[in-house]
Length: 138
Image 1 (cartoon, rainbow, N blue to C red):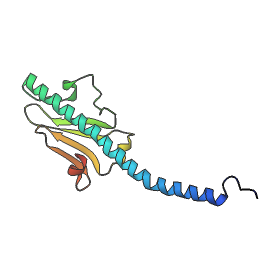
Image 2: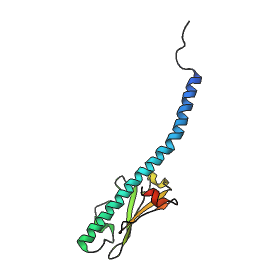
Image 3: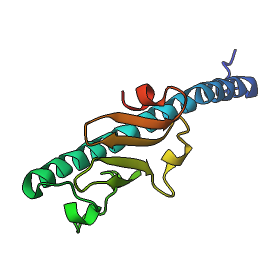
Image 4: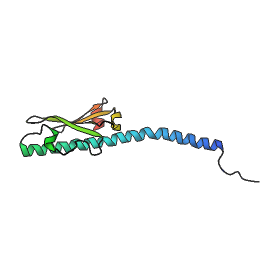
């Protein structure tokens, strides 16, 4: 009696079905993890900007009113390039720095955290979902 060799079509289809189910379950979780991880890029960039503003205040007695005053050679994107930085205010008053997803970045799909903000007092906020502040600054 000869033993059959190889896979039958039914066995192959069962394997493909299992792979399809696992992929369907894993991809959304992985995508969500990427979005959360890239938010850390924005948070670090905002904290760096906050540090530059504090140093500028110490050196000049006022806050910078433009990003170029802080560093004219800098690109003003987050380290990995997923967010673009900007701020309003400055001078003798307070300021608010904002990180928004860069054009073409997959972070544009992050509806939970559309933008992150940090002001001169260190207050952190975000726009997006109802609980954006807690969710985006974890």
